[in-house]
Length: 219
Image (cartoon, rainbow, N blue to C red):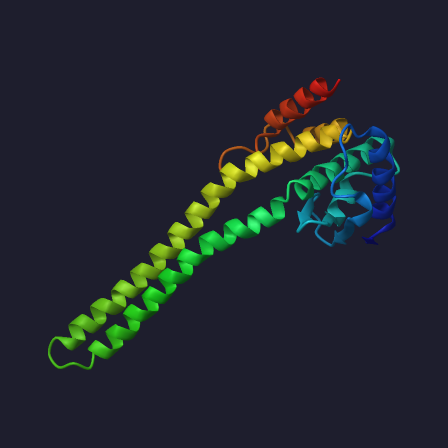
């Protein structure tokens, strides 16, 4: 299924055709079950959603002209990489991780609201009520702020660790499907120094090393 431009349709058709002839592994999920969609985002990128959907941005076709064989090979490499995310069910893993991190945040939110409610009740008590009430309200605000900060930090830290592993596995998958040269060219276009640090994507130079090592292993 294709929902997008003629460029995406051409890339999708060639990707399916070439995958069957190039791949060194069984292609899963089957390519005829993949839904290809195009977004209006101007940044050159692509994303995998759920277990059967690949979304390619309009910006990818602005940078890479599919009428050029080298650019088409690059786009195919990107599609193969995203297919790797589907094959490893990374989208489902991301949803599970988000749920795990959101649950404590919800519990802290409930605790904060409870403190605020108790503080409001205490505030009507003569003498000490106003002091205790305001104190509990302040505690509720601190609890909510702390919960939000800890949740965001731990989620980011987890995505740095798990995201890099997912990207490397998807890169290896692209090489096994026979599109290692394409994903390498994509990474080189945007610079071998991109990624790393607190980015969930590994350094592009290291990703290229991973793809090249996988291609040599296959040979």
